[in-house]
Image 1 (cartoon, each protein chain N blue to C red):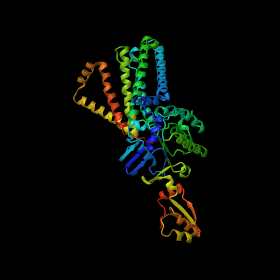
Image 2 (image 1 turned 180 degrees about the vertical axis):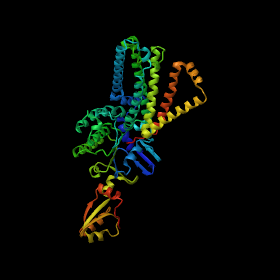
Image 3 (image 1 turned 90 degrees about the vertical axis):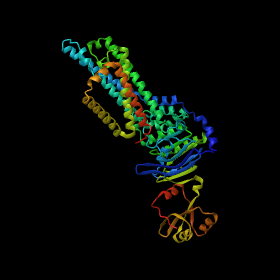
Image 4 (image 1 turned 30 degrees about the horizontal axis):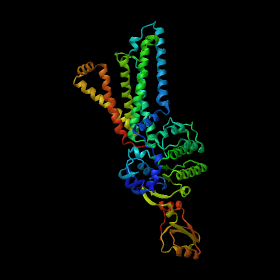
Amino acid sequence: MSPVIEVEHLTKRFGGLTAVDDVSLRLDGGRIIGLLGRNGAGKTTLMSLLTGQEFATEGRIRVFGDSPVEHAQTLSRISFIRESQRYPDSFKAKHVLASAPWFFGGWDEAYARELVSDFRLPLDRPVKKLSRGQLSAVGVIIGLASRAPLTFFDEPYLGLDAVARQLFYDRLLADVAERPRTVVLSTHLIDEVADLLEHVVVIDDGRILVDDEAEALRGSATTVTGTRSAVDAFVAGRTVTHRTGLGGLASATVARLDAESQLAARAAGLELAPVSLQQLVVQLTNSDQEVSA
Amino acid sequence: MTAIALDQTATQDRSRSLGQRILAVVRLHFVNPTAILWLPLMILGIIFGANWILWWLIHEFSGGKDLTEGTQWSGASAFIFVYMMVVAIQAMHLTFQYALGMGATRRDYYLGSALTFVLLGAGWAALIGTLGVLEELTGGWGLNGRMFTSVYFGADGAAVRYWYVFLLFLLFLFLGALSGALFVRWKALGVTALWVGLGLLLVAGLAVVIMTNAWGAIGGFLGTIGTGGAYALTLVGSALAGIGGFLVLRRATPRA
């Protein structure tokens, strides 16, 4: 079982800025992987490196077992429409959809047409005149209809309204279920996609903070809420990743609680709530966080 | 599980041959033919129309003077060569990032673009060459005007003129490809550096020629190789520009 993406000690520097910092990853395919992180965390740079669009400063990348750089065989199996993808100025949306099939062996024209109508994309409008949401729809349609064995979506929902976003999530899930492939979904709107993700990679400041199964992460932390004194007594001796307080009430996030601890917490009158993926990522990537024992 | 899942997706994983990949880039350049075909054709038409009116005016008001002598030095068609260079720069600037987004390698993209430029050069040579033949047949468009048979295209006959025009287009298009690659990689700075560099080379060359008083030798050399030889020499420049463009583009990355 060879992983689809293998990265060893990957570093990318732009002048003095280190966008990707000594990253090592092994990602198995056939599932939806979330690449989560704040703006400027290095998500797009990492994806650009994985697709051979940027050159690594140091380190080794293997995608489908080969370096993606200038490797036509590998690149033809990858679809990556970056969030800031530029289209030729003279292009209308229809020119994009006319040319994309020439590059993707698995392009499904009927599916593309269906998506165009779903997203109400005006084909005769110059790409320059498309709204942010319509531009995102172009990227989403290419990403889905190319049916590439490895598909990257880079913040695909920008400017899309709630209906269109839901449409994208539904279509993605249905299509991947029908035609298993590897999807990397880069996003900072984590709550919306949390249920889609099977694996989560969190990147912050160019470094990988989390590389784990989504299921494992979902139960990995718990928030306990109650009176300040009860919370203080319960968390004493535990690692607290986050805490807030209001008047006599307090809540604290602690690592996974076993059954015994859960009973003890309830007995002390505390309420327990699982920490959502989004909260977890916020807490992990918020450098101003207050960490107390 | 991974390996099995990937094997199952093999049907949606038909990889393309080199020829198909290069053809995709060629088609990409032509998918919207406005900028690359229709606009330059329109401009050529306008230039020709304006010239024809000028010839007619001179003809009318000079009492039917023969224009052959004067208009054989016409530089009217020069514009179209420079314009095609700009078209080449623009084509690369516009499509490079997009082609990379479509999963093209830089190499396939450059080969496809180069083939596009050769095709464009051939098409334009066919057009200009044929217009030259028409110009001769119609007695300079009825007015002894000359635009497509000017002295720059030599006096070796219509058939050879097609070839000269093609070589000239190649030179301009590949200078455009090199400039386009420089623009993609280093923006305006790269293009400026190229042309300043070429300008300096020219000045240096002139200085050497003047200091060594080599005008006679150069004249002799050009006389020996003739118009055909001089035009064939442009192939060296086109090839150098073409190879240079590839070396520059090979390490280019998409930049906003």
